[in-house]
Length: 111
Image (cartoon, rainbow, N blue to C red; front, side, top):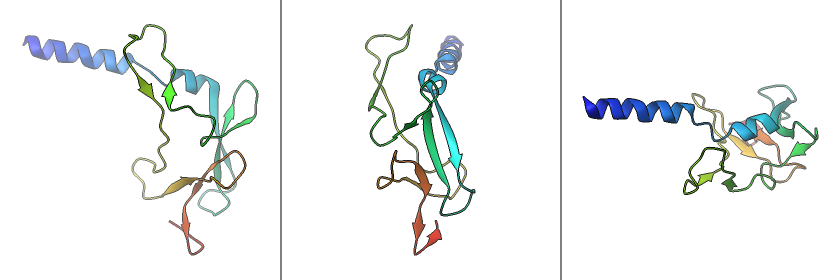
């Protein structure tokens, strides 16, 4: 019974821990172009400055620590290019300004 109580407490702590809270407050994704087309892009924008943020250059590997976190905890950022529960494959457009996310294509067809 004691192990179950400890596990439940640990799960509550994980559920209340939001390491990307700072990012959700400071950045917002914007959909550009019609969905399911070669022209569709997802661009991150800085909420305060209103300018585009490059997912390729402007997001650091290491995430900043949050108030209340232990100093020995290391957080890292990552960009997921394949949305959960979908077969669509997205890529960071490294050859475009501000590096938006676009749906991958092969021989002119969306993947």
